Structures are given as structure tokens and as C-alpha cells.
Amino acid sequence: MKRALITGITGQDGRHLAEQLVGKGYQVFGMVRGQNNPKGQMVQDENPALELVDGDLQDLSSLIAAVEQVQPDEVYNLGAISFVQLSFKQPELTGDITGLGVLRILEAVRIVGGTVDNPIRFYQASSSEMFGKVRETPQNERTAFHPRSPYGVAKVFGHYMTMNYRESYDLYACSGILFNHEGEKRGLEFVTRKITNGIARIKLGLQDSISLGNLESQRDWGYAGDYVDAMWRMLQQDEPDDYVVATGETHTIREFLDVAFALAGYESWEPYVTHDVRFDRPAEVDLLLGDATKAKEKLGWTPTVSFPELVERMYLADLKSEQSTMRSRRR
Image (cartoon, rainbow, N blue to C red):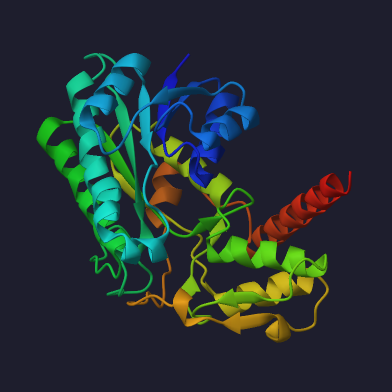
């Protein structure tokens, strides 16, 4: 039975990945900061086979202890301050966790190491936000980085540090440059989930409108369940490498609104959406479009959920959740 350690276990990707790995017969450990973490209980209720271990991306000694305790075959570093807008308000914390946190977990993996015959394999969650003010479209593994947020800058640091440990210490270390991926487990602070949850609540008479920032941003949106499958595939290869994971399609937030409101039976979203400058980024990323040719050819990976299917999946899940909450309150 293979053993996997996942940081960021309470996030969208951690939850999807844990579910998939348990399904593949892995013994899965999720790292949380403090055993009384309320989200830790949530993920254990969701996935009873998951075991939690204590660890903190700001504390190297705790990471060494976690890796020694678990003795993993694979480590997936998904932990980060992952909300881009928040990174502008907390740049130092973002740099410490999203950037230096990668260095610390790499160092823990290097120190513990596994065995000569079975070294620990490491995955780093890199991000399309590293491309920022893009130099070319579409973006692939060789496209230059020009990050436009503290989050993107920190991810670039983590990406290059992963490459450095691979080249310096012969570590089996991969980075997945994942473009935007969403789903029913996405946090409510992210624009896609904010939209689908907001529409569900409007449909049920629980709120009147949705406040959003820039509607012209173009993103390459895929389904998180597909993308964590790509993470796993990376660590099954003979040699470590870095891969772009994307659908190869781009859509604006306006298009997301069009599809989502149509699903809910509305002819137009404009009466229900307001602009709030608080949600505009100080430096915007206008267009992201990924070229996942390498992942398709070398990993055999392809996305399975289309853009309309993704939006429908998220809206129906939010509608069901809000209806369930309403019924519970009436009891």
C-alpha cells in the first residue's frame, strides 16, 4: 500500500486528491496546522479513510516530523495562501507560506529522503498566475514568467526552488503549472463559486445580487477532479518533469455569468450583478490560455469535463446545498 502526504488537505485540490488516492488504494495523510483545526474535522467526515498529521509550512521542524511520521512514497504540496486578491493585502504572509513554505517542505523531503530503492516523490502545485502579463499565447512550459501579484511571485519562487532541488539533490520533484480549475469544493471567496452560489441564493430568494470585480478577465477553466488526476500521473513517470495542465480554451467572466444564469432560467444576468471596485486587482492578469500538449503526450492526460458541464455541476451543487440548509433551518 502506497502512502501519500498532502499539504493543503482542507482546500479544494487536497479534498479531490485525497478522494482519488484512497480510491486507488493509497493510505492518505493530510497535514493540518493544529489538531483542533475545524476544517480538519470537515475533511475527515468527508473522507473517513483520511488520517491527519500535524504540520506547519512556516515551521521546518514540524515538516520534518510529519514526513518522518508518515514515511510517504509521495508528497503533494498543495498548501498555500491561494486567494490572489488576499495576497495583495497580506504579501508577507503569502511570501512566507506560498513561497518559503515550498523550500521548507522540499528540505524536509530531502532530509528524510525515503530509501535508496524507494525515494520520496514530490509534487509542487505551481500556477498559471506565474505567467501574469503573458509574453505569448498560449502559455506552455517554456513561456517566460511575469507574475502580477504577490501570490504569483511566491509561486514563481516555489517553482524554481523545486527545479533547483531536482537538479541539485537529484530529488524526484515535479511541478504542475495548473491553470484555473474549479468545482463544487471551491471556496466561496473565488469568483466562480461566488457566482454559482450567488445565483442559487438569488433563485431561492435569499439574496438580491452579486458584487463582482473585473468581468473582462479571460481564464482557461477546467474541473479540479481532472487536474488532481494529472498531479498523480506526474509522480508515476520514470523521470520527474514539469507540466502545464489546462483545457486549451479561454472564457471571460461574462461568459461564465451567461452560462450560469441561463442554467438557472434567467434571460439576463445584468439586473443581478453589480461592480465593486474592492474586487479589482491592483495589477490585473487579463488573459490566461494553456497549452497542455506535453501533459497529453507524456502523461496520457486529457480533461473530461467541458466548460458548460463545469458551470452546471457547480450551480446544481450549490442549489442543492442551499435548499438543504433552508430545510434544516425550518425544522
